[in-house]
Image (cartoon, rainbow, N blue to C red; front, side):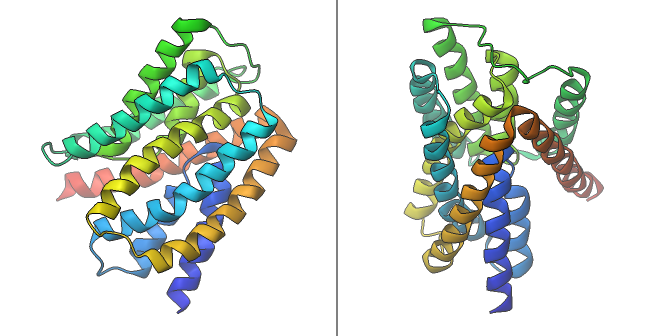
Length: 256
């Protein structure tokens, strides 16, 4: 019972973090593995998705009501993210993701250093593309990160935020809002796969989903009231934590 309550509390915190800058899985996935160490990983990942998708979708809806989103670019990007995630989930059954796990902390470190070096990055919302060109770039981001989410997953929301800032010229607030839509699509693809294979504890997922949505409400409120600078700071903290987490996982993999 205590383990279940701790996991539900972790889901609330994850919903808040994810709504601001992505990276909620950094909290929730380790909590699930700690609470239920003998459970097949696929079941824990599926249960995580069964909870997290609701917080992400709620954040997307709340942002859409308050932030002007560029739907002409995001609509095809959402479809591409859904396709990429499905392709990634299929590919992971045929490829070894070990090299990606080793490379990931270095990729995240490059993202962190670049964002710190570019003091003005993501502070001003100034889309650099328009029309079909913007839709094409957004779709490429959706497809690429969607595929990554299907193959591996950690930091998907943060990667979406960074590439929307760097590639499309959005500020961190608009990028985070847009990322929630894309991340909801990738989560939906993964959730469908886990549900079809019976890898979800629906009762626990439902309780975690309620907590995740409450955290999402808090996170979106903080982001919307405090603006792009706050989201940028949260993004940097999440990426730094992801570097530590994925670096430790990579070190264990190499040390074996």
